[in-house]
Image (tube, rainbow, N blue to C red; front, side, top):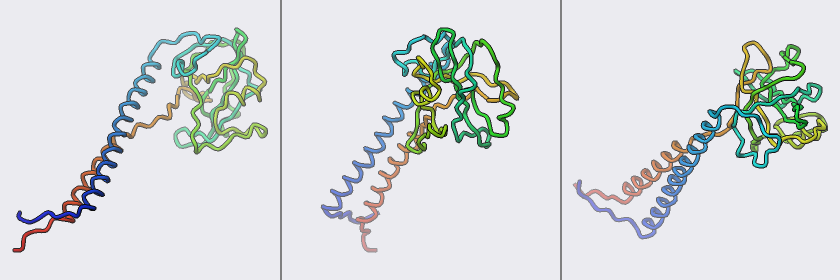
Length: 229
């Protein structure tokens, strides 16, 4: 195919700038993919470790996140918190967070799992001294989460400090423990840990690299002039 390619100087400069930006965005997403993959691998490794007794004092909560732990104590059912809205299999409901008074004297907020308003009267509340197993997690609210209204007992996200104050807990742990298992037909339904970590960076990287390629194709087509027949 014969012809001439005669782009203007300004077109070359603007096209190179666009190419640099698009390639930069794609490369940034590749870097994010590497970081996110490492984070997810770390979470998986944490959750695969055998359960250990949760220490009385946690100086580095992040180091304990997603670890399996055991606790001995009893639930304070008269101080339950219902965090909304939460869904399970398309049904609206709540996460039931209940203070757990440890035998050692400290307290931990325990996410017992999902329950709907219709099932509330059937909620299981085992009494007495219990040994429970769960997975440590920290609250990770998003910018889309509405603010809590503690004065109305209206909760949209877990807030350890505010909930501990509302429940008058002493020595509350700086983490939440999610019940690690789910018993069929028993509510609240535990056994679900929300990492809330999406990993779409590969798709984003491909998108920006494809856009970079398309920008060059358009540039070529715009300034390519076939030879007269």
